[in-house]
Amino acid sequence: MLNLALRRKMAKDSIAINPTEVIITRTDKIKNKAGGYDEGPIDLPTQIVRIFLNNPKLSTKTTEGGEVKKKTYGMLADYEADIKISDEFEGYKVVDVTPIKYKGEIVSYQCKVEVV
Image (tube, rainbow, N blue to C red):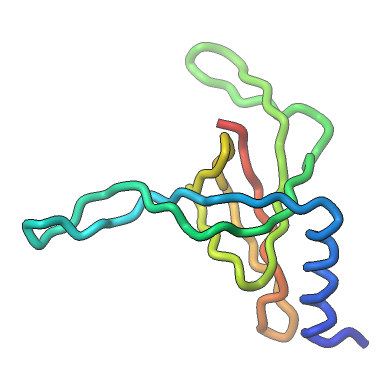
């Protein structure tokens, strides 16, 4: 039977097969000089993830200008990652974040990302 530590190690080993260093930019509230808040970009510390082609078929999205075909990508991050929906990095945008859990504890994060 696999325990939590072994599952986390397996996720890190999978990331290590094809690691990518990313600096995530998050739009968040930043305190301003007037005592209020403004929204602005914040760069998070570098994180190591694995980015992979999620589905070899192109997904089709219908817009006012017609159909747009896109490749869909996945991203695997370890349990300590700081990733949220709408985060951006190096031409990608995070559109979904699913925590993978074992007995209520996070093992890793499986994400969907789109090219922007």
